[in-house]
Amino acid sequence: MSKLEARVYSLIKQLPNIIKQLPEMNRTLRGRLAVYFVLLLCCFATGAILLLSLLGVLNPEDKNVQTAMDYELKSAAVKVNEEVDKTAAIGISLSREISEIVERKLLARQIEFKDLNNNPEALEDIQAAVFGSLRRNLHMSSSSGAFYMLNATVNSHVPDKTKHALYLKYINVYADSKYNDTLTFIRGIPSLARKHQIAMYTSWQLEMLPSLLPQYNHVMNNYVEDLSNAWLMTQSGPIRDTWERPTIF
Image 1: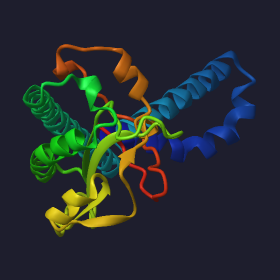
Image 2: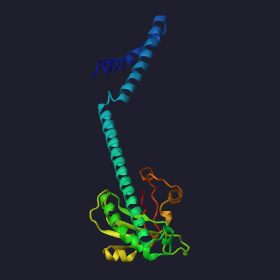
Image 3: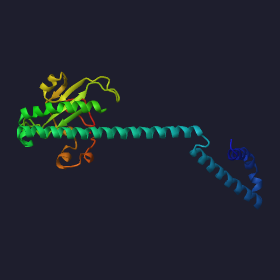
Image 4: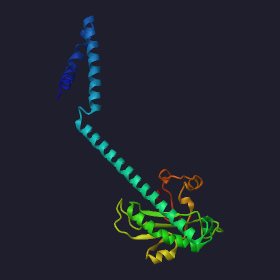
């Protein structure tokens, strides 16, 4: 016990006697001054005790717990930031790979990007070429799935304005560990799934609705030359006809 704590404890023990003497002490000016001094000392002691308690001096275990929790919180924040940076970097690299593949395929067919609409043969050729990059980058990341989507469709006349897409997802993901490498096709061309012996998702569809990406219109209407500053993370949102609610980078 420190000297300050001992003095405070001694003063508290003397309080009953001081209270009993208050009537007699109030009869003289000197006594009244002593009472005011004692009350002031009590207020000071109470404030000191509260301050020492908040600082963890009187309760060192509380201070140790708070220090440990602050350390864990900072450590978790660092890990989250590292994971976000890693995922963003993989996504940017994948975007560049896909862009190069699409450009090569357009050049080989001597067509423009707008000519991909209602052109299933060209879209299937692109998806087959992109598949390897998508699968490889998914293995490199800690994400549960990976997809790409082009502003093109095999049928521009249907009511639902879906877009050409390939979406691969791990079937089993526990916490941040993938305890097997089994993939499923949520979106994509079925012949490609059969070729790579990948099962189709129970509610598989050929193409993807842009509503999966809430910022789709923003991305499409705002061209950014430097992809390193163009990545974003969406809020979790549902995939139609599934129970999945992914957060997308």
